[in-house]
Length: 116
Length: 118
Image (cartoon, rainbow over all chains, first blue to last red; front, side, top):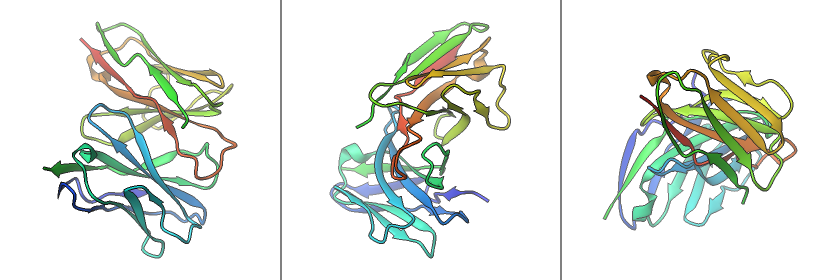
């Protein structure tokens, strides 16, 4: 089974609107972390936001927020007030356990296009 | 934030050449480094995990003799693509983490290397 599933290969959003990018995960570990990265066409991986399995509050970082539903094993990224510069690939990732040396499992990504 | 430098950004070379890619953590001690390969419009594929001073752990299907990884110091890991062929052309990207970091520490990525073998 896939550890991370992103079911939206491509998404379009109007500038200044909000958009939700879906991510579901599969793990039997009690301790895990969920991460979202943005990858522009230039290729670099930009860390956006983190949610820990024990966090009771949804994570927020500026225009990014994470809709964490632990029982459903989902960690959807919400981007508010979309900007043209948000057009990029977005990857959801999970690290099992608390050891930061553990590997990341990445989803297949969602390509977001912001329309002016 | 933590900075990881990857060099070179672009490489174009002839078939049969060996190519070395460097990944440096500039402001923290990277006890673990990860090497990924990414094809266009696809996700990152983990090639290997290297811990400082130890042999790298390769993922299934990744040729150890083709992709040599060295992690001799806490700030530098290298990936050498030996006798590269056109099918090795890809985007290679490294990331680093500090094993004693807290669980919320992300992997810090280099900017990647685009390798083209003619």
